[in-house]
Length: 403
DNA sequence: CGGTTTTGACCTGCGC
DNA sequence: GCGCAGGTCAAAACCG
Image (cartoon, rainbow, N blue to C red; front, side, top):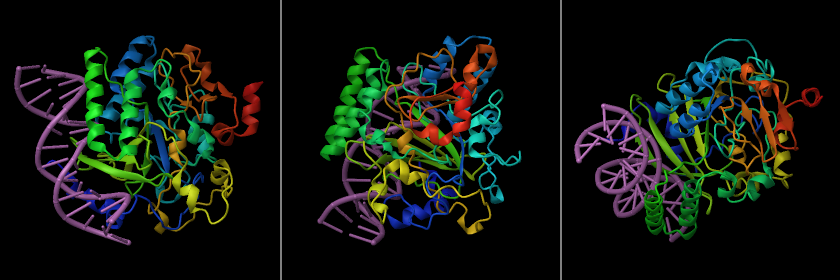
């Protein structure tokens, strides 16, 4: 049996399976998307090992920190579950009850989302977003779920919706592979003729092969969430298209694809073998449409997506909500919105820039870095737009940075 | 009946 | 070249 899914996983996934409906929770949300209380634990960029290796090569040999990060990423990818130190270092502790939000179970005291982002201690903050996409796109970490106090909703989404259907965003230097990877998928869905599409896909790959080009995956980003629910609500509808047992892990990995036509976004969901309470979700690609849920879920005319996520205003962190809430319904603030934004002006970074956070084409935030590398960039926060970052970063901080 | 999930088979990349 | 593991396909089953 290839699918070891009938084990512990079953229970956790039941919520989704029983309904047969779109993987989406309809329960009362313990918090609104973007709410600080959301359980996102940590982010990491699981982009292709190879790419990372290449990047690593380019990286200065003396960049120990960077190396460590990469290694961890590898490990992470190897077993999506492993929560390597790097992440454990992340201010993963959310001031929430029952450690629900405690990404790594550590107890480092209360830490706000911003702090989580590394703003608390820019010089040391180890964590967060890594956008290793060497040449191109940056992975906008979805600030997902968590609570980014304010996530850029699909609205900015206009971003989301307007994102050049993917490929372009992937970029400049991004290889054709990336583009091809997306187009085929999108078209297949659109035509409803997956069979042909699949063939097309393969054909494309073969062509790439002939050309001697290596197939490149779409930029991906992942995050961990402590939740009982495997599939976290993120504002989009997903269709499960596969499940595989994961080596060295009792938990299977599920593969989902965005149900929207022409949207080739995929995501993988799996539980950490080390900590079953942790769900690792990896997104690949970017949505080419607005969140279907926001579009229809509201009872009232929806404000611009961005606004939607912004409200209700995150209440003071009152972590006293019922335990029943825990993990039952985990809604991620439209992660899709964070998917690879249009080509950013990210000059080829020599080394992985740990803590790179981007919300859209014009926003980039290096939350941390290696001081030795002039990563003063670290604390370098360049906010050029009014997207996610602005919501995430207090104006005060921004001003300071700008000065 | 349309959409989603399940799941065995198949494809692909990678390490040895 | 071979084997393994990850990823995807697609037919059948399932569900509302």
